[in-house]
Image 1: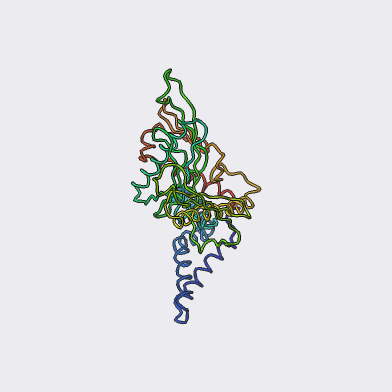
Image 2 (image 1 turned 90 degrees about the vertical axis):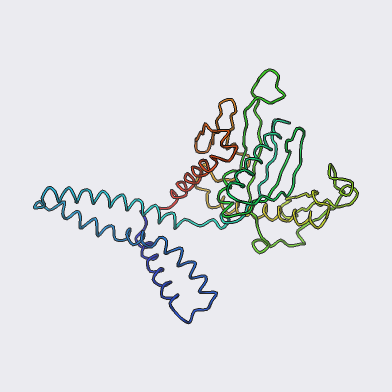
Length: 357
């Protein structure tokens, strides 16, 4: 049940915005702000008004039902209308509650995705590579742009670690539930006796943050330069192009050595550091909000086992919502990825709706 006062406030706010926008005295900046607010409210105002008028309409129908002189046909019509009205009210209430939920300002941002091989040795690094290929396929289907920031390869085409930026529309809102431990169960190519091995990889999805979103004081940073190691060619290894940036107040450290230019490595490192600091603050705020409730999904806890990819059974299971899809190959190809994401998003919305009284 939504408080009547809250409904009245929304209707009043819509009327005031309408009046303000029709004024010739309003300046351009304020007009743009109020137009956005009015546009958002306009999408829900009809549902708000219907919800507001529900009690009167219900009362009118109830009079027909209570009238002993009403004929049978009229009573049947009234009963049907009352049931429809109740369903409409429930639907409108849900829409309004969704509208009233605090908006996640990060949802519309691009994302930085970090994938690291976990337990399982070489097999874990191969699985990390499979996960990255899956996100690349999903991105291609959605016409998102994937930009590699950092990559560390292992033997046989595996990945010890990969960090990439993904750009497009509403990236973070789509990928944010991917953070956590992904587990794979399959027979490795090197296994001679056909035994199923279990390995894991960790995925972290962070909103990509611009400088205007988060100001970092230069005095809070310690920057070390060193000679790049590993493959990359002679020119990489003979100059101090690698860089390590440490945020002193939090201890968060980022290293970059993929580029030959120290300047480019620093720019990439700052992009990752900015995203991690932003997510750290978001997590702190969310933890404060959720002290009295425990959500199953959307926590972003990287130590949480969220999903299992079982190759012998051809299934992928998300443990947060107990959803199993017997379409493992299609899932890794990015074909049914949205089916999982939509289920996770719906569950997260239901959990958040439960916080509104």
